[in-house]
Length: 476
Ligand SMILES: [Fe+2]
Picture 1 (cartoon, rainbow, N blue to C red):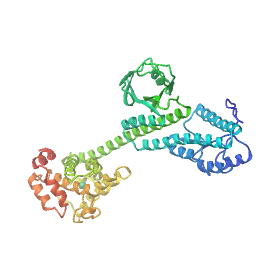
Picture 2 (cartoon, rainbow, N blue to C red):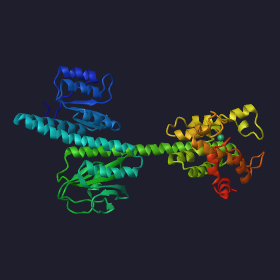
Picture 3 (tube, helix red, strand yellow):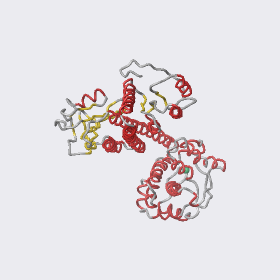
Picture 4 (tube, rainbow, N blue to C red):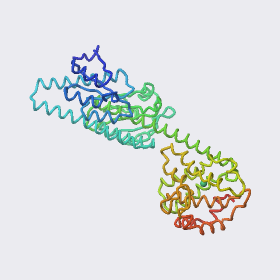
Protein backbone atom coordinates (compact mmCIF):
# COMPACT_ATOMS: atom_id res chain seq x y z
CA UNK A 1 0.00 0.00 0.00
CA UNK A 2 1.22 3.50 -0.77
CA UNK A 3 2.44 5.64 2.11
CA UNK A 4 0.85 8.98 1.30
CA UNK A 5 3.60 11.00 2.90
CA UNK A 6 6.19 9.08 0.88
CA UNK A 7 8.63 7.71 0.04
CA UNK A 8 6.90 6.36 -3.02
CA UNK A 9 8.01 3.28 -4.82
CA UNK A 10 7.73 3.90 -8.52
CA UNK A 11 8.18 2.02 -11.75
CA UNK A 12 8.06 3.18 -15.36
CA UNK A 13 6.99 1.75 -18.72
CA UNK A 14 7.95 3.26 -22.06
CA UNK A 15 4.52 2.76 -23.57
CA UNK A 16 1.09 1.22 -23.01
CA UNK A 17 2.10 -2.31 -24.06
CA UNK A 18 4.96 -2.45 -21.60
CA UNK A 19 2.65 -0.94 -18.98
CA UNK A 20 0.13 -3.76 -19.48
CA UNK A 21 2.85 -6.38 -19.24
CA UNK A 22 4.13 -4.93 -15.96
CA UNK A 23 0.63 -4.69 -14.52
CA UNK A 24 0.15 -8.40 -15.19
CA UNK A 25 3.43 -9.31 -13.48
CA UNK A 26 3.27 -7.13 -10.36
CA UNK A 27 0.77 -5.35 -8.13
CA UNK A 28 0.50 -1.59 -8.38
CA UNK A 29 -1.59 0.90 -6.42
CA UNK A 30 -1.97 3.65 -9.00
CA UNK A 31 -1.15 4.26 -12.67
CA UNK A 32 -0.12 7.58 -14.24
CA UNK A 33 -0.32 7.57 -18.03
CA UNK A 34 0.32 10.01 -20.84
CA UNK A 35 -2.34 10.26 -23.55
CA UNK A 36 -0.09 10.30 -26.56
CA UNK A 37 2.17 7.23 -26.59
CA UNK A 38 3.58 4.99 -29.30
CA UNK A 39 2.12 1.51 -29.98
CA UNK A 40 -0.69 1.73 -27.42
CA UNK A 41 -2.16 5.19 -26.65
CA UNK A 42 -3.22 6.31 -23.16
CA UNK A 43 -6.96 5.84 -23.66
CA UNK A 44 -6.61 2.33 -25.11
CA UNK A 45 -4.14 1.51 -22.33
CA UNK A 46 -6.68 2.64 -19.78
CA UNK A 47 -9.41 0.58 -21.42
CA UNK A 48 -7.23 -2.55 -21.30
CA UNK A 49 -6.37 -2.04 -17.61
CA UNK A 50 -10.04 -1.59 -16.72
CA UNK A 51 -10.82 -4.97 -18.32
CA UNK A 52 -8.52 -6.89 -15.98
CA UNK A 53 -8.20 -4.57 -12.97
CA UNK A 54 -11.22 -2.21 -12.72
CA UNK A 55 -10.38 -0.97 -9.22
CA UNK A 56 -6.92 0.46 -9.88
CA UNK A 57 -6.89 4.30 -9.98
CA UNK A 58 -5.62 5.71 -13.29
CA UNK A 59 -4.44 9.31 -13.64
CA UNK A 60 -4.17 10.74 -17.14
CA UNK A 61 -1.41 13.26 -17.93
CA UNK A 62 -2.02 15.68 -20.79
CA UNK A 63 -1.25 19.14 -22.24
CA UNK A 64 -3.80 21.94 -21.71
CA UNK A 65 -4.65 21.85 -25.38
CA UNK A 66 -5.78 18.26 -24.94
CA UNK A 67 -7.93 19.02 -21.93
CA UNK A 68 -10.98 17.62 -23.70
CA UNK A 69 -9.15 14.29 -24.10
CA UNK A 70 -8.42 14.24 -20.39
CA UNK A 71 -12.04 14.95 -19.58
CA UNK A 72 -13.16 12.20 -21.96
CA UNK A 73 -10.77 9.88 -20.14
CA UNK A 74 -12.42 10.83 -16.84
CA UNK A 75 -15.77 9.97 -18.34
CA UNK A 76 -14.40 6.60 -19.36
CA UNK A 77 -13.25 5.86 -15.84
CA UNK A 78 -9.95 7.65 -15.21
CA UNK A 79 -9.67 8.73 -11.59
CA UNK A 80 -8.15 12.14 -12.27
CA UNK A 81 -5.96 14.08 -14.65
CA UNK A 82 -2.86 16.27 -14.46
CA UNK A 83 -2.10 18.94 -17.03
CA UNK A 84 1.40 19.62 -18.35
CA UNK A 85 3.60 21.29 -17.27
CA UNK A 86 3.04 19.90 -13.79
CA UNK A 87 4.88 20.20 -10.52
CA UNK A 88 5.63 17.54 -7.95
CA UNK A 89 2.91 19.11 -5.79
CA UNK A 90 0.34 18.45 -8.53
CA UNK A 91 1.32 14.78 -8.61
CA UNK A 92 1.31 14.60 -4.82
CA UNK A 93 -2.15 16.18 -4.73
CA UNK A 94 -3.76 13.65 -7.11
CA UNK A 95 -1.87 10.80 -5.50
CA UNK A 96 -3.14 11.68 -2.05
CA UNK A 97 -6.64 12.22 -3.37
CA UNK A 98 -6.70 8.84 -5.13
CA UNK A 99 -5.40 7.05 -2.04
CA UNK A 100 -7.93 8.87 0.15
CA UNK A 101 -10.80 7.89 -2.15
CA UNK A 102 -9.62 4.31 -2.20
CA UNK A 103 -9.42 4.07 1.57
CA UNK A 104 -12.89 5.66 1.91
CA UNK A 105 -14.28 3.00 -0.36
CA UNK A 106 -12.42 0.32 1.57
CA UNK A 107 -13.72 1.49 4.95
CA UNK A 108 -17.23 1.76 3.54
CA UNK A 109 -16.91 -1.74 2.19
CA UNK A 110 -15.70 -3.07 5.54
CA UNK A 111 -18.30 -1.40 7.70
CA UNK A 112 -21.55 -1.22 5.85
CA UNK A 113 -23.96 -3.33 3.88
CA UNK A 114 -23.66 -3.69 0.14
CA UNK A 115 -26.68 -1.46 -0.51
CA UNK A 116 -25.29 1.46 1.45
CA UNK A 117 -21.92 1.02 -0.20
CA UNK A 118 -23.47 1.18 -3.65
CA UNK A 119 -25.47 4.23 -2.64
CA UNK A 120 -22.42 6.03 -1.25
CA UNK A 121 -20.37 5.17 -4.31
CA UNK A 122 -23.13 6.32 -6.59
CA UNK A 123 -23.48 9.69 -4.94
CA UNK A 124 -19.70 10.14 -5.00
CA UNK A 125 -19.67 9.20 -8.68
CA UNK A 126 -22.56 11.53 -9.42
CA UNK A 127 -20.81 14.46 -7.71
CA UNK A 128 -17.61 13.78 -9.62
CA UNK A 129 -19.34 13.39 -12.97
CA UNK A 130 -21.30 16.57 -12.43
CA UNK A 131 -18.08 18.55 -11.95
CA UNK A 132 -16.38 16.89 -14.90
CA UNK A 133 -19.36 17.37 -17.22
CA UNK A 134 -19.65 21.04 -16.28
CA UNK A 135 -15.91 21.49 -16.83
CA UNK A 136 -16.15 19.74 -20.19
CA UNK A 137 -18.97 21.91 -21.51
CA UNK A 138 -17.37 25.10 -20.18
CA UNK A 139 -14.00 24.23 -21.63
CA UNK A 140 -15.52 23.48 -25.05
CA UNK A 141 -17.41 26.76 -24.90
CA UNK A 142 -14.23 28.71 -24.13
CA UNK A 143 -12.67 27.37 -27.32
CA UNK A 144 -15.31 29.17 -29.36
CA UNK A 145 -14.64 32.62 -27.91
CA UNK A 146 -12.31 34.97 -29.73
CA UNK A 147 -12.79 38.28 -27.91
CA UNK A 148 -10.93 38.58 -24.61
CA UNK A 149 -13.64 40.62 -22.92
CA UNK A 150 -16.19 37.91 -23.70
CA UNK A 151 -13.83 35.36 -22.12
CA UNK A 152 -13.67 37.47 -18.94
CA UNK A 153 -17.44 37.76 -18.90
CA UNK A 154 -18.05 34.05 -19.49
CA UNK A 155 -15.43 32.87 -17.01
CA UNK A 156 -17.27 34.79 -14.27
CA UNK A 157 -20.58 33.04 -14.92
CA UNK A 158 -18.78 29.72 -15.48
CA UNK A 159 -17.07 29.96 -12.08
CA UNK A 160 -20.38 30.84 -10.41
CA UNK A 161 -21.86 27.67 -11.92
CA UNK A 162 -18.89 25.41 -11.33
CA UNK A 163 -18.33 26.44 -7.70
CA UNK A 164 -21.98 27.09 -6.84
CA UNK A 165 -21.19 30.63 -5.68
CA UNK A 166 -23.32 33.76 -5.93
CA UNK A 167 -20.60 36.37 -5.69
CA UNK A 168 -18.00 36.15 -8.46
CA UNK A 169 -16.00 38.87 -10.17
CA UNK A 170 -13.14 39.31 -12.59
CA UNK A 171 -10.83 42.31 -12.55
CA UNK A 172 -7.74 43.33 -14.49
CA UNK A 173 -4.54 44.31 -12.69
CA UNK A 174 -3.72 47.87 -13.75
CA UNK A 175 -1.29 50.31 -12.08
CA UNK A 176 -1.56 48.79 -8.62
CA UNK A 177 -5.34 48.47 -8.78
CA UNK A 178 -7.78 45.71 -9.58
CA UNK A 179 -10.20 47.13 -12.15
CA UNK A 180 -13.34 45.01 -11.87
CA UNK A 181 -14.67 44.28 -15.36
CA UNK A 182 -17.39 41.72 -14.81
CA UNK A 183 -19.24 40.63 -11.70
CA UNK A 184 -22.12 38.52 -10.52
CA UNK A 185 -23.56 39.36 -7.11
CA UNK A 186 -24.28 42.44 -5.03
CA UNK A 187 -23.11 45.93 -6.04
CA UNK A 188 -19.43 46.33 -5.47
CA UNK A 189 -16.47 48.60 -5.89
CA UNK A 190 -15.12 48.81 -9.42
CA UNK A 191 -11.56 49.78 -8.48
CA UNK A 192 -9.74 48.05 -5.64
CA UNK A 193 -6.21 49.00 -4.50
CA UNK A 194 -3.99 45.90 -4.41
CA UNK A 195 -1.55 47.14 -1.78
CA UNK A 196 -1.83 45.43 1.57
CA UNK A 197 -4.53 43.00 0.37
CA UNK A 198 -4.52 39.29 -0.35
CA UNK A 199 -4.37 40.19 -4.05
CA UNK A 200 -0.89 41.66 -3.55
CA UNK A 201 0.31 38.36 -2.14
CA UNK A 202 -1.39 36.36 -4.93
CA UNK A 203 0.22 38.68 -7.47
CA UNK A 204 3.69 37.87 -6.15
CA UNK A 205 3.03 34.16 -5.83
CA UNK A 206 1.15 33.97 -9.16
CA UNK A 207 -0.96 31.36 -7.43
CA UNK A 208 -4.40 31.00 -5.93
CA UNK A 209 -5.27 32.00 -2.36
CA UNK A 210 -8.09 30.82 -0.14
CA UNK A 211 -9.17 33.30 2.54
CA UNK A 212 -10.90 31.77 5.54
CA UNK A 213 -14.05 32.82 7.36
CA UNK A 214 -13.24 35.71 9.73
CA UNK A 215 -10.55 37.07 7.38
CA UNK A 216 -10.78 40.36 5.54
CA UNK A 217 -12.65 40.68 2.25
CA UNK A 218 -10.00 42.24 -0.05
CA UNK A 219 -12.65 44.03 -2.11
CA UNK A 220 -14.66 45.86 0.55
CA UNK A 221 -12.62 45.31 3.72
CA UNK A 222 -15.52 43.61 5.57
CA UNK A 223 -15.09 40.50 7.70
CA UNK A 224 -15.63 37.36 5.67
CA UNK A 225 -18.60 35.22 6.60
CA UNK A 226 -17.83 32.62 3.93
CA UNK A 227 -14.58 31.55 2.30
CA UNK A 228 -13.11 33.79 -0.41
CA UNK A 229 -11.18 32.22 -3.27
CA UNK A 230 -8.75 34.25 -5.40
CA UNK A 231 -7.55 32.74 -8.69
CA UNK A 232 -5.12 34.57 -10.99
CA UNK A 233 -5.48 34.55 -14.77
CA UNK A 234 -1.95 34.33 -16.09
CA UNK A 235 -0.96 35.50 -19.57
CA UNK A 236 2.63 34.95 -20.76
CA UNK A 237 3.78 34.31 -17.17
CA UNK A 238 2.29 37.61 -15.95
CA UNK A 239 -0.83 37.95 -13.83
CA UNK A 240 -3.38 39.65 -16.06
CA UNK A 241 -6.18 39.75 -13.51
CA UNK A 242 -7.96 37.96 -10.70
CA UNK A 243 -11.11 35.94 -10.32
CA UNK A 244 -12.69 36.42 -6.90
CA UNK A 245 -15.22 33.82 -5.79
CA UNK A 246 -17.19 33.86 -2.56
CA UNK A 247 -20.65 33.30 -0.99
CA UNK A 248 -21.10 29.65 -1.83
CA UNK A 249 -24.81 29.07 -2.27
CA UNK A 250 -24.68 25.56 -0.84
CA UNK A 251 -23.28 27.05 2.39
CA UNK A 252 -20.19 24.85 2.47
CA UNK A 253 -16.49 25.58 2.20
CA UNK A 254 -14.71 25.09 -1.13
CA UNK A 255 -13.66 21.46 -1.50
CA UNK A 256 -10.21 20.57 -2.86
CA UNK A 257 -11.94 19.10 -5.86
CA UNK A 258 -13.86 22.32 -6.58
CA UNK A 259 -10.71 24.40 -6.26
CA UNK A 260 -8.90 22.04 -8.58
CA UNK A 261 -11.67 22.22 -11.19
CA UNK A 262 -11.68 26.03 -10.93
CA UNK A 263 -7.90 26.17 -11.37
CA UNK A 264 -8.12 23.90 -14.41
CA UNK A 265 -10.78 26.10 -15.94
CA UNK A 266 -8.75 29.25 -15.20
CA UNK A 267 -5.68 27.68 -16.86
CA UNK A 268 -7.80 26.80 -19.84
CA UNK A 269 -9.02 30.41 -20.05
CA UNK A 270 -5.41 31.64 -19.78
CA UNK A 271 -4.43 29.36 -22.65
CA UNK A 272 -7.34 30.67 -24.70
CA UNK A 273 -6.18 34.24 -24.00
CA UNK A 274 -2.63 33.35 -25.01
CA UNK A 275 -3.89 31.77 -28.22
CA UNK A 276 -5.95 34.85 -28.97
CA UNK A 277 -2.93 37.10 -28.42
CA UNK A 278 -0.80 34.89 -30.67
CA UNK A 279 -3.50 34.80 -33.32
CA UNK A 280 -3.78 38.58 -33.23
CA UNK A 281 -0.01 39.08 -33.57
CA UNK A 282 0.22 36.56 -36.42
CA UNK A 283 -2.86 38.00 -38.14
CA UNK A 284 -1.57 41.57 -37.88
CA UNK A 285 1.90 40.57 -39.13
CA UNK A 286 0.30 38.80 -42.03
CA UNK A 287 -1.90 41.72 -42.94
CA UNK A 288 1.03 44.10 -42.74
CA UNK A 289 3.11 41.83 -44.99
CA UNK A 290 0.31 41.60 -47.54
CA UNK A 291 -0.24 45.37 -47.43
CA UNK A 292 3.47 45.88 -48.04
CA UNK A 293 3.20 43.61 -51.09
CA UNK A 294 0.29 45.66 -52.41
CA UNK A 295 2.25 48.86 -51.85
CA UNK A 296 5.20 47.28 -53.72
CA UNK A 297 2.96 46.58 -56.70
CA UNK A 298 1.52 50.08 -56.59
CA UNK A 299 4.93 51.71 -56.13
CA UNK A 300 6.09 50.14 -59.39
CA UNK A 301 3.26 51.79 -61.21
CA UNK A 302 2.64 55.22 -59.73
CA UNK A 303 -0.50 55.65 -61.80
CA UNK A 304 -2.24 52.86 -59.96
CA UNK A 305 -1.31 54.32 -56.59
CA UNK A 306 -4.13 53.99 -54.07
CA UNK A 307 -6.15 52.12 -56.71
CA UNK A 308 -6.64 49.08 -54.45
CA UNK A 309 -7.84 51.15 -51.55
CA UNK A 310 -10.33 53.10 -53.69
CA UNK A 311 -11.62 49.88 -55.29
CA UNK A 312 -12.12 48.26 -51.89
CA UNK A 313 -14.04 51.32 -50.65
CA UNK A 314 -16.32 51.52 -53.68
CA UNK A 315 -16.95 47.76 -53.65
CA UNK A 316 -17.91 48.02 -50.00
CA UNK A 317 -20.47 50.74 -50.84
CA UNK A 318 -21.99 48.47 -53.46
CA UNK A 319 -21.95 45.53 -51.02
CA UNK A 320 -23.99 47.62 -48.56
CA UNK A 321 -26.65 48.27 -51.21
CA UNK A 322 -26.70 44.62 -52.28
CA UNK A 323 -27.07 43.54 -48.63
CA UNK A 324 -23.94 41.43 -48.24
CA UNK A 325 -23.42 39.79 -44.85
CA UNK A 326 -20.57 40.70 -42.49
CA UNK A 327 -18.24 37.92 -43.72
CA UNK A 328 -18.66 39.09 -47.31
CA UNK A 329 -18.06 42.71 -46.36
CA UNK A 330 -14.93 41.74 -44.42
CA UNK A 331 -13.70 39.80 -47.46
CA UNK A 332 -14.32 42.80 -49.70
CA UNK A 333 -12.57 45.18 -47.31
CA UNK A 334 -9.43 43.06 -47.10
CA UNK A 335 -9.60 41.11 -50.38
CA UNK A 336 -10.50 44.24 -52.31
CA UNK A 337 -7.32 45.81 -51.08
CA UNK A 338 -5.36 42.71 -52.16
CA UNK A 339 -7.15 41.97 -55.43
CA UNK A 340 -4.21 42.86 -57.71
CA UNK A 341 -1.51 41.44 -55.42
CA UNK A 342 -0.69 38.86 -58.13
CA UNK A 343 0.76 41.65 -60.27
CA UNK A 344 3.88 41.23 -58.13
CA UNK A 345 4.51 38.24 -60.43
CA UNK A 346 4.15 40.20 -63.69
CA UNK A 347 7.31 41.59 -65.28
CA UNK A 348 7.88 45.37 -65.15
CA UNK A 349 8.24 45.69 -68.93
CA UNK A 350 4.71 44.32 -69.33
CA UNK A 351 3.08 45.83 -66.25
CA UNK A 352 4.46 49.30 -67.01
CA UNK A 353 4.27 49.16 -70.80
CA UNK A 354 2.55 52.25 -72.15
CA UNK A 355 0.10 51.58 -74.94
CA UNK A 356 -1.25 48.37 -76.36
CA UNK A 357 -0.04 44.96 -75.18
CA UNK A 358 0.69 42.05 -77.51
CA UNK A 359 -1.36 38.86 -77.17
CA UNK A 360 1.46 37.14 -75.26
CA UNK A 361 1.86 40.10 -72.93
CA UNK A 362 -1.88 40.12 -72.33
CA UNK A 363 -1.72 36.42 -71.45
CA UNK A 364 0.96 37.17 -68.88
CA UNK A 365 -1.09 39.98 -67.31
CA UNK A 366 -4.05 37.60 -67.18
CA UNK A 367 -2.12 35.35 -64.84
CA UNK A 368 -2.31 37.85 -61.97
CA UNK A 369 -5.61 36.63 -60.44
CA UNK A 370 -4.23 33.08 -60.16
CA UNK A 371 -0.84 34.25 -58.87
CA UNK A 372 -2.66 36.43 -56.32
CA UNK A 373 -4.93 33.65 -55.09
CA UNK A 374 -1.89 31.38 -54.78
CA UNK A 375 -0.15 34.01 -52.65
CA UNK A 376 -2.98 33.98 -50.11
CA UNK A 377 -3.73 30.23 -50.47
CA UNK A 378 -1.46 29.09 -47.62
CA UNK A 379 -3.40 31.40 -45.31
CA UNK A 380 -6.27 28.99 -44.81
CA UNK A 381 -8.27 31.56 -42.91
CA UNK A 382 -9.11 33.73 -45.93
CA UNK A 383 -11.22 31.53 -48.22
CA UNK A 384 -13.57 34.32 -49.39
CA UNK A 385 -10.71 36.72 -50.07
CA UNK A 386 -9.06 34.02 -52.16
CA UNK A 387 -12.21 33.59 -54.27
CA UNK A 388 -12.48 37.32 -54.76
CA UNK A 389 -8.86 37.63 -55.89
CA UNK A 390 -9.10 34.68 -58.28
CA UNK A 391 -12.36 35.70 -59.91
CA UNK A 392 -12.29 39.51 -60.11
CA UNK A 393 -11.76 39.37 -63.90
CA UNK A 394 -14.53 36.87 -64.65
CA UNK A 395 -17.31 38.23 -66.87
CA UNK A 396 -21.03 37.72 -66.37
CA UNK A 397 -21.39 36.16 -69.84
CA UNK A 398 -18.58 33.67 -69.22
CA UNK A 399 -15.91 35.31 -71.40
CA UNK A 400 -13.66 36.42 -68.55
CA UNK A 401 -10.64 34.78 -66.92
CA UNK A 402 -9.08 32.69 -65.41
CA UNK A 403 -11.91 30.10 -65.21
CA UNK A 404 -14.56 31.46 -67.60
CA UNK A 405 -17.21 31.31 -64.87
CA UNK A 406 -20.65 32.55 -65.80
CA UNK A 407 -23.57 34.40 -64.16
CA UNK A 408 -24.12 33.53 -60.52
CA UNK A 409 -21.39 30.90 -60.83
CA UNK A 410 -19.07 33.85 -60.22
CA UNK A 411 -18.84 34.56 -56.47
CA UNK A 412 -21.02 37.58 -55.56
CA UNK A 413 -18.13 39.48 -54.01
CA UNK A 414 -16.08 39.05 -57.22
CA UNK A 415 -19.01 40.33 -59.33
CA UNK A 416 -19.15 43.39 -57.07
CA UNK A 417 -15.42 43.99 -57.21
CA UNK A 418 -15.42 43.74 -61.03
CA UNK A 419 -17.69 46.80 -61.28
CA UNK A 420 -15.71 48.82 -58.72
CA UNK A 421 -12.36 47.84 -60.31
CA UNK A 422 -13.46 48.75 -63.83
CA UNK A 423 -14.96 52.07 -62.73
CA UNK A 424 -11.75 53.06 -60.95
CA UNK A 425 -9.48 51.92 -63.80
CA UNK A 426 -11.55 53.82 -66.38
CA UNK A 427 -11.52 57.04 -64.41
CA UNK A 428 -7.75 56.88 -63.68
CA UNK A 429 -5.51 58.98 -65.91
CA UNK A 430 -2.60 57.02 -67.41
CA UNK A 431 0.52 58.32 -69.15
CA UNK A 432 -0.94 57.22 -72.48
CA UNK A 433 -4.58 58.17 -71.91
CA UNK A 434 -6.66 60.56 -69.86
CA UNK A 435 -9.11 59.04 -67.40
CA UNK A 436 -12.78 59.03 -68.36
CA UNK A 437 -15.20 61.38 -66.63
CA UNK A 438 -17.52 59.90 -64.05
CA UNK A 439 -20.45 60.19 -66.48
CA UNK A 440 -18.58 58.46 -69.32
CA UNK A 441 -17.45 55.64 -67.01
CA UNK A 442 -20.99 55.12 -65.71
CA UNK A 443 -22.26 55.03 -69.30
CA UNK A 444 -19.73 52.34 -70.17
CA UNK A 445 -20.63 50.25 -67.11
CA UNK A 446 -24.31 50.56 -68.02
CA UNK A 447 -23.50 49.43 -71.57
CA UNK A 448 -21.67 46.33 -70.30
CA UNK A 449 -24.46 45.35 -67.90
CA UNK A 450 -25.48 41.76 -68.65
CA UNK A 451 -22.34 41.01 -70.66
CA UNK A 452 -19.33 41.95 -68.58
CA UNK A 453 -21.21 42.79 -65.38
CA UNK A 454 -24.06 41.35 -63.35
CA UNK A 455 -27.07 43.65 -64.03
CA UNK A 456 -28.12 43.48 -60.36
CA UNK A 457 -24.70 44.76 -59.27
CA UNK A 458 -24.78 47.52 -61.91
CA UNK A 459 -28.20 48.61 -60.58
CA UNK A 460 -26.77 48.73 -57.05
CA UNK A 461 -23.77 50.73 -58.28
CA UNK A 462 -26.07 53.23 -60.02
CA UNK A 463 -27.90 53.96 -56.75
CA UNK A 464 -24.71 55.46 -55.31
CA UNK A 465 -24.74 59.24 -55.56
CA UNK A 466 -22.69 60.28 -58.63
CA UNK A 467 -20.95 63.15 -56.88
CA UNK A 468 -20.03 60.79 -54.08
CA UNK A 469 -18.68 58.32 -56.59
CA UNK A 470 -16.49 60.90 -58.20
CA UNK A 471 -15.26 62.90 -55.23
CA UNK A 472 -14.81 60.07 -52.79
CA UNK A 473 -13.38 57.39 -55.01
CA UNK A 474 -11.38 59.44 -57.43
CA UNK A 475 -10.21 62.11 -55.00
CA UNK A 476 -10.91 64.78 -57.66
FE1 LIG B 1 -6.93 42.88 -61.63
